[in-house]
Picture 1 (cartoon, rainbow, N blue to C red):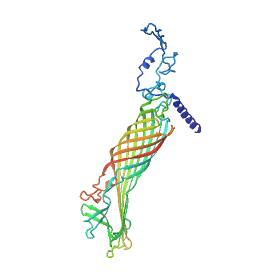
Picture 2: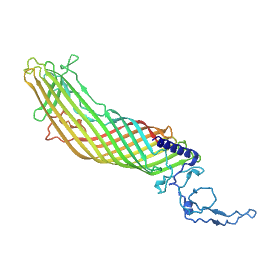
Picture 3: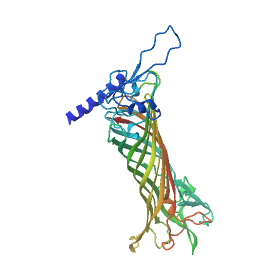
Picture 4: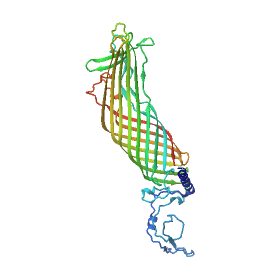
Length: 478
């Protein structure tokens, strides 16, 4: 392993030495060498060209010019005048010997052989990139799940929302991203790349704490209000003065994950130099451009949940169920798993040590939406001799829908060394046909309050999802 690593470092140093010595190759897709095409078809014998008569009588005639065929060991702009004995053939134009500027394209696009590290950009056939991500995502609307009322004689007539009637899962998120890959050839024409990232959201939670229906001495009961199609609006008590002492909590969470694996193929690669010959690719006057096509597989997963729990005790002196404990739990969760193919383009431009990478891609595939609903009711009447009774129900709904995921990525970088780059980026992702947990709580159109769950009429509600944010990280090539 040590020998292989030393060999690899030696190869990289040799490559860097060749580049800085002015032996880097340009790739000429934009320049048509008509004379080269003509010379490549000529035979090995020199052709004498008779000069035209001079219009000035006193001027000595110009010696005959000799056109030398191009052999395999000579460049197009070779200054050698010796003839080659082997048949002439086309070779890769070497623009490093031009006097002012050069531009060219990757030889793999021209069907020409590449036997050296003749590519545009940073050296190295292997790369690894790590990023810290700070992203924001779209949320899902959570209906009012905790309410209060101001009229002690009318619990359902003057309801006010304590928690809910808001979007959840739309805050900022912290995560990480890793990307690695390798080129199969020295020309950087074909390669493979893999990517993974994930982050968890910051939950929007609520905890009433243990309450007796007062808040700083003010009347402030807590209830869970729902609409029953047959019984109408109902307010189930959690904390009501002289009747119930209780606590209600609401927890939300979301998790986003993605992985991809694709092939890269170079469509175009060019280099320009505007000052002198053989300048290093990191020189401030050097510019490069490459355009790659990518295609492969994309996986994405989005999980979110809403958990509501209330615990209360009957404290009424006149109640036959005094000191009975009641517990109600409602859990909503949604899991989205996307699998599909992905295609895109990646354009990389460099100006000396500065670079800008613009990638646009889109994935098409199937998203599996899985929604799970869980409800539990528990009554502990041990104090009154009634014992403990408990009932629960679990429902699982799943379906497959067509979905598409376009993505835009912008990454700016600064090459600290030949093999280390600092990067900062921006990403934008859109995902269609996504199920969110909060959206599975059906609401009453008139009041906006949750309705009693009915498994016979339930259908998965879907929406779109987007995520955007910045990245800070670095890239290592070797």
